[in-house]
Length: 129
Image (tube, rainbow, N blue to C red; front, side, top):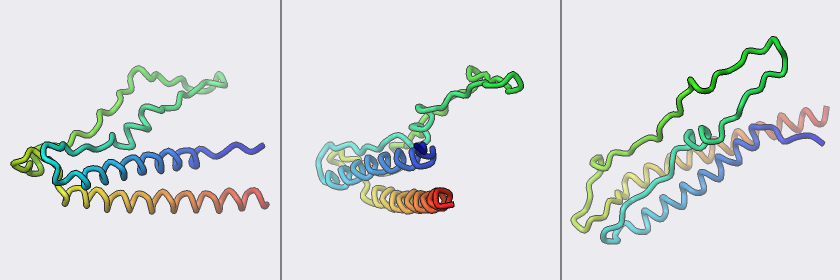
């Protein structure tokens, strides 16, 4: 049996993350006129990758050992609350900001789909050979 290449698993995780972010953006837009509603966002995908770090193993005496204690995890990106106006009703949703996020999301979906399509073609060419 052939194992699934790592890039397929990575792209699947990215697609799941994109789906969660899309739901979050849609929720923010749907509550744009709700008094007191605070906009939310998901952690960056790099943070998801950092939490699922792969450990390296030494399988040969000639391999170098990696000291992971010296590596520091990156902190998640903080979004400045003052960068967008808060309405008098206490609502912090900016429709313009949410639409910008939706545009980024669309580009990320296209990129992830393109990578998956290319990797599938490469994988199928290898299987047919």
